[in-house]
Image 1: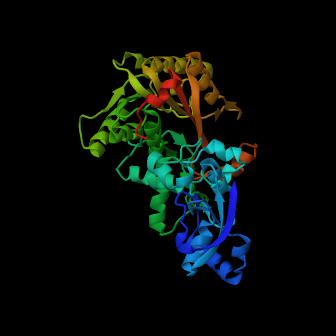
Image 2: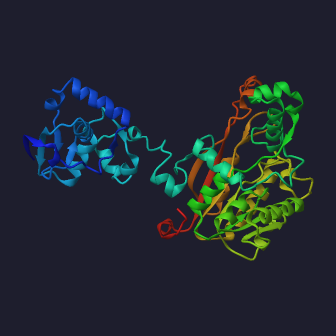
Image 3: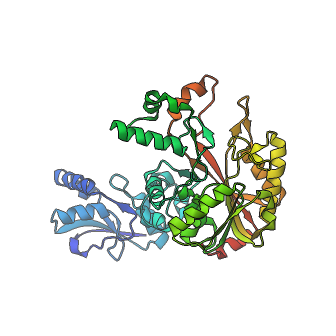
Length: 441
């Protein structure tokens, strides 16, 4: 390494466009004030350049001095650095001003950053909401999927604005008691706010309208989760199998994005309502979305193979979907339920093409005594018994909704209020083939 110090004309210096450090307008103004007040700063820390006069350290000082109208500046020229050494110098140089430009930083070798003892959390990559990652993947693909996030909420509104009404076909409701995901109670709250011309918190609403404390509601599947799972794990234009389709959401999103979808539900009225939603939203009577009114145990009778399994199975008997004798949500023995559930999973897996993914959205739930059934673990175990291993898992963070109301009651018996679900992603086939698959993202 050779070092030379000299004073040069500022026009000779070249700004480094690949520097992953950026500065806001207000930060730049503060830096300019500092340089005006303490001009000796520049002699203490010169702008560092390579032999081509490209800045290695001092991009922000260069910009500030240029805007201040300086004609000449002291520089330190470092020669004979390798490209890797230049990158390390850039990263380690000045952390006092600015923040990381993750659009540029994502193209850097993460292993090298670790070797240089750089704290990756400083880069704020995980919290990133804009830029190339969002453009490519819609939402940052990590193991935490936060439905409370503004990006997520805005995306969800776009989907619901299409006219998705997943509760149609289940007007009698499936869930009791102020569940924040229950569409009926949400509608009642919105109606009350319009009538009273004020916004209510959930606690205020149920205090003002106590008759709704026991209102039935219908769980609504999140369309953004559908979109992400389809884009991330189903091949482009692939065929999707949903053994427990319930409402219309998963089919509508699939059809809208150009996938072929087959959903099974045991209730004829639900299938009729779902088909009507497809006609209303996709504006076609015949589409790539196929709804079948049948028992999920007959999934093996479908004369087709699929590229992705995506479903949210019944959580034992927590939700009663119908009074039909063969509805597995009516089974009151968990072991018997698991036996049938395992049979359905096996038959669905047999319909899945090789080198493809399957995604089950599940959650642990409590028995009558308050202890948890390990439904998440049992689902993983069933897949493993069929030689299909868990490949990804994520936590789906749900809305807070009426949780503050339920906390006091739950904590009398030391029960934490549950605000998440588990997204389990399995892979069937040769993992070396994944890179060869063609996804929308």
